[in-house]
Length: 450
Image 1 (tube, rainbow, N blue to C red):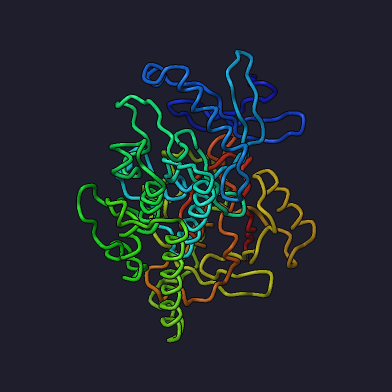
Image 2 (tube, rainbow, N blue to C red):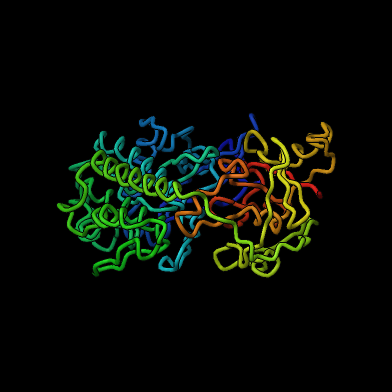
């Protein structure tokens, strides 16, 4: 087994120009961590040279070590491997906004759209973290979905400060070396990275907000369409603030984190008021035209590779349900919910805490031993059963429908495997299924035949 210092390597999480990030185990306490090893790409080595690369790597580690903030990843350890290469260790988190929205290598392709309340919470926390960096004189310069991790309790953690710089610092980087990520980097940063200030981070945060709320990227070098035209749930209240966040002229953008946070908070409150006014008319009538003839879904766990997810699990290319299954949820008691459309009984709340996949099975066993809700045939649901819990919101009136389940517990393990070390889960709030390492922690919502 490969080791890096005292850590056992469990897999490669990602690689960039300057280093590789591994999933690793600290055997002495059986703790999974993320380990970043200095391992520059040959092209990067030729472009910058060892001295500059080492300086950038140590700068990132030093920054993480000296900033303590709930929305910035912290440093757990720093050391050298057997060959003398430096590495540092951070908390291992499975989720990030990039995987949440389904952003791919073809960055221009559409992504999943976040509900406005979730997108607001994430961007507010990103700006809170940026405010802490800027207060120390640090400009991040690479805010993008995959650099925003999500904790088990769905909080934001900013990572990858390898391209950050101190305010006023001038570095002798070659012209061919680009700072930031296409579409997310501000125009002035793309042209003169050493002269870009904090407002470049606001531009990247604005693109991130636009991406989360519309599922698209605004066109380069053109006036973008109003966001409300791409996501009707937003309404026109969001248009001005999102467009200001991505103005190509830094003088017309937000000038401080506090200003941007206040503007977004104000618009979010206006949006909530609009939802509340819509709901004054009542939740609306259920669609009685849907065929509610009981239909059995696949109950036996399966091993499903990613390339077969569309056919076996009934998903589209963004892993959302290709067809919305009709459901008939009725609360049986405080502990369970009945779905007459599929002959199922669901646990109404679920596990009190997120669990890894193996602990999820132990949780099911405990329910059966305790005869929870007078039922002893609880099991972990399949993806095909779990996606029935997805109730997409397409108009504001959908927010008026009373919640049957505990909606805060929205990342749920299934019984289906992807490989020997990964399994499928369903995000009911975001409306998609995906696979993750079995050591990740998600909630469990048990199911039984009615």
